[in-house]
Image (cartoon, rainbow, N blue to C red):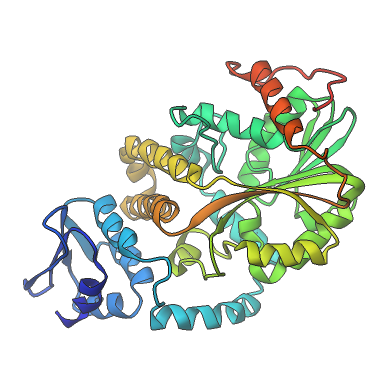
Length: 416
């Protein structure tokens, strides 16, 4: 099996036993344990795995032409992903993909309103019942905040909201825009605890209907693209939406933020990113899970922020918090495996199993991370000391932790 030579050169620990479609057996070994045994069921699969492993490994696992007979998916992917050095030389396919990805973005018009709507609905409008199986009770589909490391998913997601809101330095009567508001948890959290009005916008039909039904206090929701907004806002928050913007549209995104912010306004952008130079997203995830998605490096975001005339006032790297979040989601998904398979099929379950596990390992071993970037139109849009964040977060924790539903707003409260 000559196609296994690159794997032999790559593998740093464990043993992978490969059974070919003709029954031939080959061992690729770095250490004795752990051991995983896989069977290839189609003769052409070995060439697909040689040419484009990052696409055809998940594709063959999902469609069943690659079967794990001993061990499990997590063990296999840990051996592979942890063995990949972050500074490794890209494969020919990866170099080719990096060259053509900008062209594909332009040809498919990734990032325009029509395409963005289609891409968002492909991912988020599968079924609210499905997402309810693995998300926290508030249906938050973004990185949680494990301050101590022993929080439940629900506790960590609650802390994430408090952590984000504490950076906004909210004042009474302000108008807040939540771009990509999801199922509405953050907008409702803000409206329940501050004397402000919050408007959430999303392109997902399912998210919009869910959020609208549960809107509380001063929160409202609209079904449209953020680029259609033309009002002025004191605060803007966007959690997990920038990943859908596309690298060709960062300038447009931050220019729109600048046009919507009042002169003393603040915007908090929470996004998955990557450490190091820009790299194309895994092509299988882009095609099968998140069409149109792209994970930015800071080197791509900072020029767009500066070109829009905005100041980067604060930047926090949440690092491994998303790995913990994904692990919680995967555990929840496994607990509901029978339900998912019964309602959506085995291929669907295996696709999401692969997606969640591979992403978790990407955060653990391949430089994926989460950035929270606070930006404004002037250098004094936020207090000079970061202490205002800590004080506000403490106030929010004392006020809201332990409540199963949002509390009523405290009229007149001023952050910091």
